Length: 385
Ligand code: MUC
Ligand code: MG
Image (tube, rainbow, N blue to C red; front, side):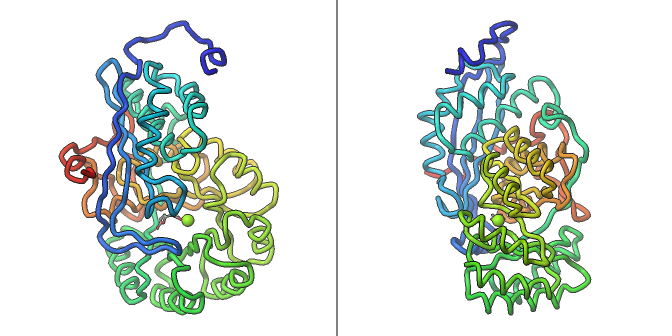
């Protein structure tokens, strides 16, 4: 199919042909237990993609998961298997400078598998950028910012620990917005926990709340009223992803803006959320949209609908976070900043020079491609045997 759909044959550069796609599952421990409504992790699972071109240049990408196939349907085992058996063969021999055409081949080879596709496309941008000597951001339209405000997520579930953690981040001028994960306990207990956090951090930090689909409509409505009173700035995915009617109804009655996360994977999902007036903000993530170009398309629909943009994560290391930053850097508006604190929650990062966190911002790395270098020693150390 793609050959007849994309019949361009002129100026093929054999040096840019994709020669090899290698996948490695890694498990990297986190500095503390990270608890969401539907899962808890003490180690992050990634699939690292190394994509080598005929010219010898290797590009890297990362597919992140959270607690196996719980946050979304992809697990590291499935991602590796589907890349090895279906996605890599679909692009081997293809030129790396035809990223949309490669994307069409990936879509024809496998339905969804967005984290896997996102990692491959990131590696393509990295390889092409390194070959041409330009940052991935330049290939995506260029930067309008080179740093993004970055929040930290509080998710131990223990308010005393969370207050201490937040204070440490504030003192080191790393983060002044905190996303609190709720839904792992009873709503009343979460609201009491939030009140403690809001009181302890009042005037010094902004709070965002993520329920990860935990609540039904009546509970969500009650909690939203309480959170408005506490001054919570934004509430993410209070109800199940399938319940767009509920999300829209809550939004109509909520004083706190609502953010769509698990309910927006595809551009069509974004269009539906916009059509139903179901959200004020959308969280953009490679694992949901399936690549940097797809992320741009989702962002474009949101912008056209007046929906604010937020740079979401799935606890990526500096490899995945860098890929996101190259896309975020080129968005004209990114009103709500980003949450790529992932590199800091790992006991060790996977790159030789981790991304820079400073003055409440995360910085776009300099250099060609993604601007980060995989640390082969760490890759081997954390690789699953
Ligand atoms: C999510 O739902 O936003 C990102 C950070 C975090 O703590 O959880 C994830 C996923
Ligand atoms: Mg979320």
